[in-house]
Image 1: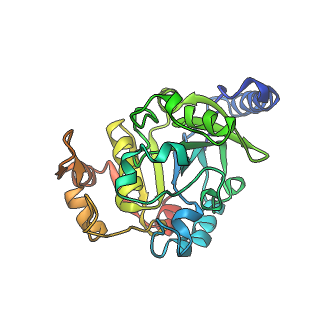
Image 2: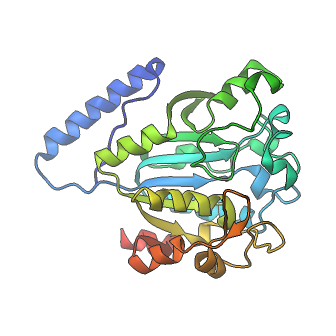
Image 3: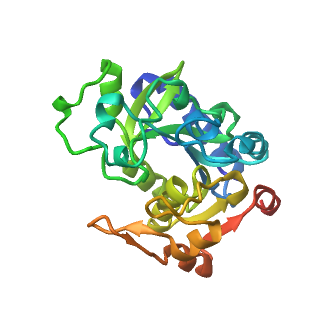
Amino acid sequence: MFCLIYSRIPSKFAPTKKVAASLFSFLTQSRGNLFMKILPMLDIVDCSKGFMVPGNILYVPGSEKTVEPIHNFLKKTEFSYALLKNDTHFEGEYKHSPEEAIFDFHQGFGTEEHEYLVDENAINASGVYWILKNKFDMWAENSDVGVPLEQIKFASDEEKEVYQNLFHLALRVDGQYHFFDHRDEFISDIQKMGVEEAVVFGHASDYCVRDAIIGYLERGFKVYWITDLCCGIWDTNLPGGVASLTELVERCPGFDTNGNVVERSILKDAVASGQLVLTTAQAYIDQQ
């Protein structure tokens, strides 16, 4: 197995980059021309208290039971890179968000709901990064909620900085986020390095996990969907809602440019072609 070193991290963390570069040099020199498999990347979706603690507005039923299995899975797996994604809102921003018409304010930056329940230090990867987002879809073009930045009231300069850097990668050091590359730059770069597979799990299956997987498929990744480390809302009363994982794969509801619900075949087509593999944590571990 071969972990790649991503060097475009903030310059203030240059010592970390030098150590990584030295390790990279040692590995390549010591192994010579031995074939080395490039590890997949890992994408963990919205494993925060807002989604995983009963009683919170967007609690996903049963999700709290995945915390221990997720950490057991991480003990037995290794990845090239890992992305931890966290839904992130601000009171001044949320009143302009399209989500406000569907859900009450949730996942406020700096609140208890925003705290993550997966320990980033448990992940075996050469780089572990965060992406904070204010939309269901991690592939959204930007954080724009339809009003100029100056019309959004932020509680602090930190909130404003975070909002302006949503959908960018960040290192988290001592609880502070240090932003650098945009998501698209990172994905493009690791694909050029040879990363071709993504392992995805988290919550909720029928919204943010679905959107993450679709984006990876559209960008040419082979995707392993670890279904027993995911939970869904499974509420057909919600816009685009489905009743089960089977229905989600078959119908994959989405929205057209007019906001109408439309059915898509991308998931079932990817399953049929082998580009999307629905599997369990143990089955994935066993095949490695």
